[in-house]
Structure formats: C-alpha cells, structure tokens
Amino acid sequence: MKAYIEERVYDVAYYLIEKEATIRDTAKRFGVSKSTVHKDLRERLPKLDRALYGKVDEVLNNNLAERHIRGGMALRKKFKEGEVD
Image (cartoon, rainbow, N blue to C red; front, side):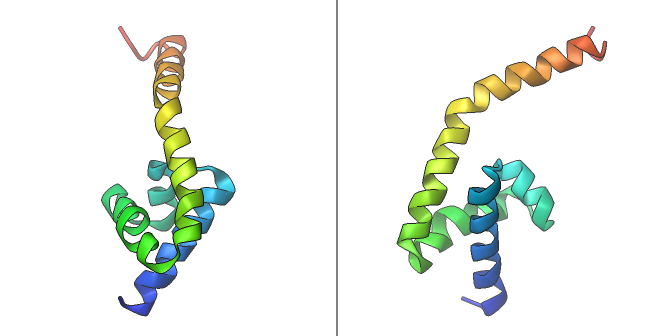
C-alpha cells in the first residue's frame, strides 16, 4: 500500500472516531468519494490496525442504527422550509 493511502486511512479513521461523523461528512472533509472512505475503513484499515478498526466499526454501526432518525429529521426540516410540496 502506498504511503499516502495509508496516511489517509489513518486520518479518515481518527476523524470519524473523533467527530462521530458519517461517511458522507468524512468524504466531504477529505475530498474523496464515499466509496473511497468505505474502502479505506472496511478493507484497508483492518489490515493496518485491528484495534482502531474496532473503534471505527462501533461508530459506523451506530450511524447505521441512527440513519432512519437523521432521514426523518431532514424531511421535517424540508417541510418546515417549504421545500416539499
């Protein structure tokens, strides 16, 4: 694995844990696609650092469990702002 990719994997992982960010937010922050973030965290990170991967996995599973709540809040906001007919 190239050094810059390995560095990005660690940067993305620490950011996600620290901010409890979503994949989408993390991808925006680092200027990469959501697919790249997924690949970094689910495929590359376990090969580099299993302990760190465990922490990332907790955040990602929590995000998955809360996904329906965030979606409902976003829809509510759209209705309040009159964006939905």
